[in-house]
Length: 482
Image (cartoon, rainbow, N blue to C red):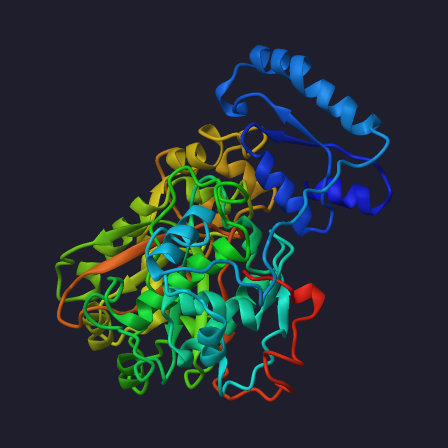
C-alpha cells in the first residue's frame, strides 16, 4: 500500500497486490493515508502455504485480471460513503441496556458493558480541564480520523476513566500519533498488543497499583486506562476485524503496568537503577507513560536464590524462552530493533541492590546469560521464515557488518549467542508484590509498536475559548463521533 501511495502521489497509476482477507484493511489504510479507493488486486490463499506452481496458477487466473482492471480503469474506484455520526450527533437512544446492545451491534464496544457517552457526560468529563474539545493531536494513519480531545473523552467515558486520568490519555494519544511508535501496525497478524507502563511521583495518588496483582484487573485506574486504549484503537484508529485488526489470536487487553516509583526512589542513593521512563530519556520527577507492543509474555515463577549469580540464570532462561520469531527484529524484519522487557518484583530487585548491583550490572549479566544456540537463532530469523533473503549464517551477517562480533565468536553452530545486540536493549522494570520472588518477561514486536514515551502534563490547558455547545461547534475535520 505504501508503495502505491508513493506512486499515486507522484501521479503514477498503481495497483496494490494484497493477500486474501486483507481487502478491508487495505481500503482502510488507503483512506487513512488520504487515498480513498485505491485499486487492489487480490492473491488467492496464503502465500506461505502454497507451492510455487499453485501460487502461479492462482495469480494468473485471478490476480492478473485485477491488476489489468486497476491500471486501465478510467477513474479511481469510488470511495465508500461515510455513515459515521458527527461528534455532537445522537448516535443512539434508549435504555442503558438498549444502548449497550446497540454499541455491541455496531462494533463500538469491546463486548463489555460501557457507560453511554452522552453529551452531558463527555462535557462533565472535560469540565475544568481547559482543553478545547476540538483540538487535534494528530491524524490516525490507519483510519484518517482526527485524534481530538473530544474523541479521547468519549472513549474515556465509555471505559469508565476518571477526569484526573485525562492528561494520561492525552499523552497516550500523542504516542499513537507519533510515527516512531507506528500505530498503523496495531492489528498485524501475529496479534501483539500494547503494554502501557506508567511511572512518576503522582502515579500512586492517581490510583495506580504497583504492588501485588500489578497486572491484574481490579484496580480501577490500571484497568480503565488500559481498557480506554483498546476502545480508542477500535473506535478511532479502526482496529476492528472489518478494517485493520488481522490478529490471528490477539492478546487480552492489558491493564496499565505501574512501576514501583517509591521503591526505585528508595534505592536511588545506593545504586543507579533508572525506571523505564528514565531509560527512555526522562527525569525521575516526571510523570511518564511509555508504550510498546508485546507479542507474548512468560511468568518466571519462584526465582530461587539469595545472590545475583544464583538468580540471573533463571531470569535469563525466561527471557530466552519468550524470544523466538520475535528475533526477526534483531535481523530480518529489522536490524537491532528487538527490545524485550523483564519485570522484577521488588524482592528480586532488592537481591541485586544488596549485592551492590545497579541496572547496568543486571543488564550486562542478562546479556551474557540470555542466549540460545546459533543454529536456533538462524532458524528463527531465516530458516523458518521467508523474511531473510538467502538465509545467511550469523557469521555472514557479522562479516558484512549487520550484526556485532559477539554473534560470530566461533563458527560452531551450537555456540551460544545473545537475543539482543547489546545489554541496553534489555529493558528492566520493577513492579508487583514486594514479598514474592517472581518476574515476568515480555517479547516485543520491534518497530510494529516501538518503545515510545511521553511526559504527562497535569497543568490545566488554556485553549478553551467557548462552550462545547452553541457557538463552539466542531470544525468539519474534527466532526467525528469516534
